[in-house]
Length: 445
Image (cartoon, rainbow, N blue to C red; front, side, top):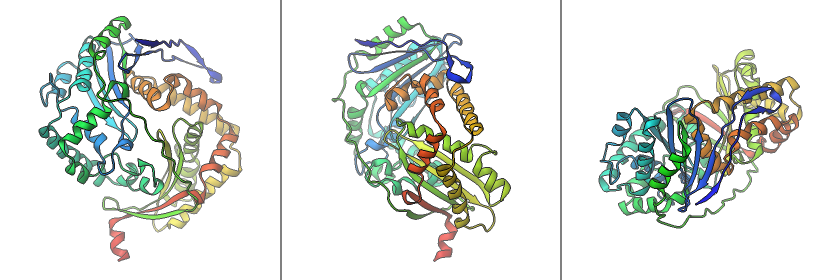
């Protein structure tokens, strides 16, 4: 067993003068390649068991979109030792809760149990990894579940093409599979054969492509033994796969597009930019910029467009950094007969100010205070800590970012904000999207 240990203790949060408990953890690898992270906190009798697999929508084969998200559902069907349809019953009967979610980059499963049920959580996740039952009954059942989820969360969700990026990423990414949606195509899932689902499981759901996190009220030595007993002998069905890095060509002129949504009455003007992935320091700076523009009622765009000029019902600006690339989305909902041209002009003016004028010392300090508070809150629950540990290890390559990210935010300068705005938020590097009610399409005809 190959081991690396990290143990971190109470520390002062840099220059803000606020004490916050840093997250202590220990991490090591099993012989089969499974990475293990343990966090002990005996303050409450609760434990989270979680497994993150490095498989997301970006890894799907062409013509088989939606497989990663589908597997999130399929692997609750049952295993050789868990009867079909009984997964959630077992969890709830033992006072626990569980869930899972999928992104472009990873799939994450977790259970929260009273700490005396830790072994149950480990057994269930080892069952999911070792011998899930993948048969036609399960595939057909979950196919209908996924279709219903797509109808509810995407097709019938107001502004769903913005929220789930189905009306955005296809314009921003031309080569990278981020252009496809996480939920995928129902036609692709319908066309897939059972053997393809089995092959997908064998390729990606292996110990060497996963991280196991156990966080909460645990005895470390006893937990290590249980982990070895339940996970140590699980074989890898295939060699650890290596991704091919896909490089997008720069966007050099505006992309003009229109999308329609039958679930809205109020249109939206969106400006979308391609930005760096989550490992890059500039992605943190973009989070600062989002807060400057629309982080609350005192933010620049909200105060200007909603309060003072009363030309917008709502404004938005947020960075969505993923493993390989990110997107930065700005938008505004017009008030009354205000045109998209007016909204775009006002948003561009605020971007240009960031590109040409340094923010004030007071504004910078406010940002640092806000993000310090967010950092403390993100580590306030065992469940949140488990998620952060897994994500930082798998997608960012540094588990200890759970403690160090605040240092990145505190190191950001006014000059950084100006530089990043100049680098990424330019008119010739963006998608200009008119997001309209379906009725507007009839008007055009």
